[in-house]
Length: 144
Image (cartoon, rainbow, N blue to C red; front, side, top):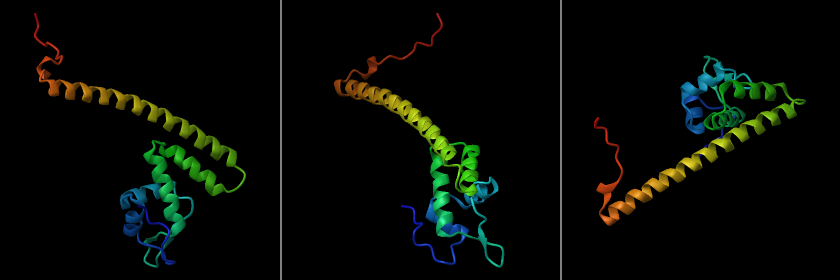
């Protein structure tokens, strides 16, 4: 489970942020370079990144959008809209609705593919149980 609620006031290191969000330190740096982080990250006097609760919550949102297939450019656009503040909620909503539609389509496709896999598993189990698995179709690659 992601641990973003109990972040100390001084923030956490990049290694701890990675552990708490479930993404690598490399990915955290990439998100920052790609313009996905909505506010500048806090830094220590030595220049090291410090992540606060809101940073971790936002990174978690980005990671989940990415995990559902949202392109980086779309996440960047969403981050820009969020950073701009009030007044663009309809555009944010449209972006999320479009992505939801894409995800729902992929889920339907995956469910169709899963049904085929389940069918094939049933065929193999049935043939193995009846002892006639050797009669399963295999293409004849011999050239006549």
